[in-house]
Length: 148
Ligand code: RB5
Image (cartoon, rainbow, N blue to C red; front, side, top):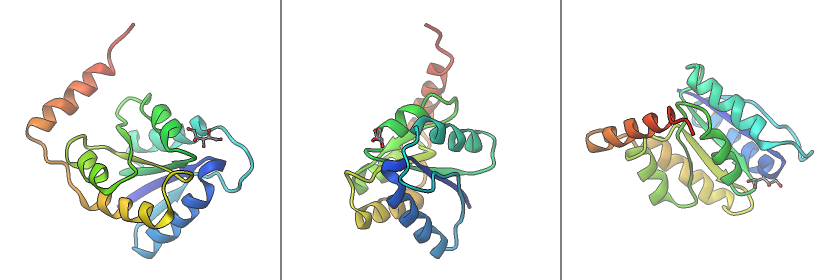
């Protein structure tokens, strides 16, 4: 599996830990930065990871910022992206099984490294259940066509 990761300055240490962990699992990781604590704008990183998934260059993505929230708001503006913030394993499992999320967002200032890695394991191992959830995911796709 090819997995895209990125962060802003607020999620840099967690992104580095996530990258090391995934590489140890034998997962192919494409790291889109950032590469230090120097201040950057998280939407730029949500965009590059989201676009790589929509383009089929990566299957899934993980985005780290201070809270995970800014990254998720930004990534969800990209058609075809379903980004979920998870700070617990129940939500991580449910958002794959029910929402078919393709990006997991984590908050370095919220979630400790140990829990974050367990959340990632849970998210990667869970599978979309389809069935009634398929209809709802399709309905989310319809909302992407909504013009105000
Ligand atoms: C950066 O200070 C911080 O706002 C960002 O990492 C993130 O938490 C935004 O949602």
